[in-house]
Image 1 (cartoon, helix red, strand yellow):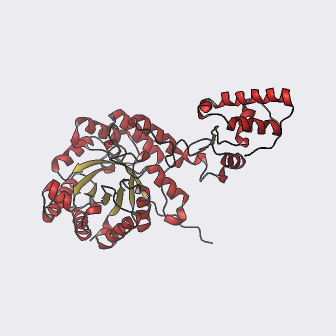
Image 2 (cartoon, rainbow, N blue to C red; image 1 turned 120 degrees about the horizontal axis):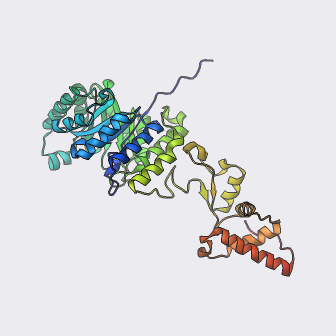
Image 3 (cartoon, rainbow, N blue to C red; image 1 turned 30 degrees about the vertical axis):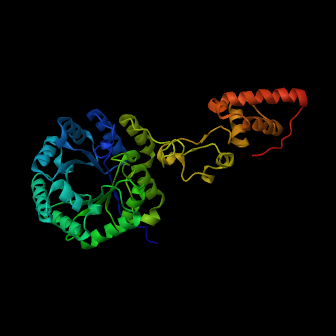
Length: 405
């Protein structure tokens, strides 16, 4: 039997330090950016969008420090289609290994951006695309071209722009859904159109970048992967402009758990995802919602009695994956009015109390009648219930074991 061929790799690119940082109140210092960049590299991210050097000297410092000390990923600096921006990126990379540094050029292409923001014709957009990439390629081996607001650009004109970018020397063309309006079906169709209509597409890789305004960034990213995209760009915890970006942890887990569906391998070490999520939350000050997919605190926690009973017997009964897969340890059985006997018995045992079936039924009945405020200290609630069971026992004898789960 022939050994199974390895799956082609999908490149995971991260833009937490650039697009993610654009989220209100998420600004990072150069030291914080460097710490996160090291964590991204440890997690196996292949490319890091490190910042926008033309905006400030502090941004130049951050990009320089990352490029100088973070090993493994390609380090990219964002540039407008301006020679001065490309020069700023080159200054940020001064003294570093330029072969692993990239200039990421972006230029808006949609009608609303051409007419309302840039006041440029189609021909001027094409000319700017060619000239900026030509200028960048004289200085950088790796150049990415991103058509800002690509999802609202006329498909045929967009293909023409990307063709001009590739002809001028772009190694990667990036398709951003800048305002997050696509559905998975439209994302799939857009990628298919580009892979079949862009002149010279075989000479470049296609990257996708989805925003989450309709809550579809992860689904759109996966649809683009199925359609043949080579690179996906994400942010940790999905932070970013407005509703944020496709969350790295969600995309990585979906691909990891469904290789037969997507047919791609990724380099991500999923055991690093929880630590990475918590680091970004700490440094940006943007907390992770408890119910956030993959890394939320409730993923491995439950208060439902039936679920608790199942989880105590085998985690696979009510979990999609083991906690260890993303760097967490164990499950958390939350005690409250909805918890069941199995969790109550387990916690009493941890407190050094062994209950008969009748005592457990009586304690459960008492606990179910407690007010929500009484559960602020679950152990105190359990001790209170146990004292009442002991009092009833001395008065009425062994309680019945009947009750509801």
